[in-house]
Image (tube, rainbow, N blue to C red; front, top):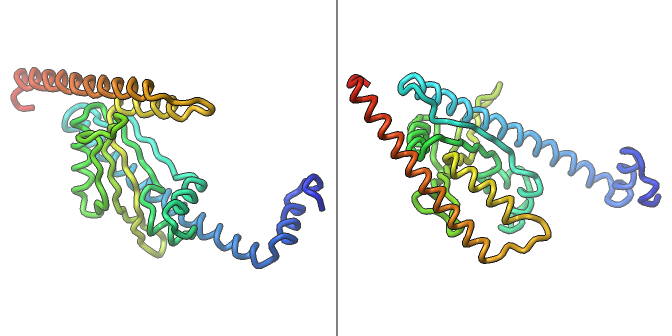
Length: 237
């Protein structure tokens, strides 16, 4: 059967059987089942983290009459990205290898209003007794060379299933609105297809990152002035 004659799923399966045999198909089916099960666990872990963050946001609103979280985004790492990352490290592409060696399969991005909110939320989350910190990278205090700023945490969080409890890794990125806008636009510009990103452009992006950091600092200062004024009016706050 030629490739042009393959039009239906059954024809495709028959072609795979001809090329690789039944053993390959059975192994692939088992691998895919294990992979899908693992991804379901990661989705559960994302939901656990999102719930914890939403609870903290609600508590903060009750105590301080404002919400520190502007938005929460989540994602599962694309299978191709998982494969490429394992291959770069010389590791096998198996569900066990994914779970043991990768900390960013499940990702949650938290967009905060002010820089101080980033650290307040991170401290509150890490103080919970069922959250275990695996790794912390503070790119706000120590930005990357290109100007990228964000607080990265990799944590273990338990998920509770019908008959078991599992601990899953989740990467959490906390950043301000300004940091998120810069990161999103930087990615669009730097990785535009069929376009050479020059050194001059990189310098301009770095300058924009400095302006973004200055904006955060100025907004934080304004927030502190507002809080100070409120406390002078109502000392009990």
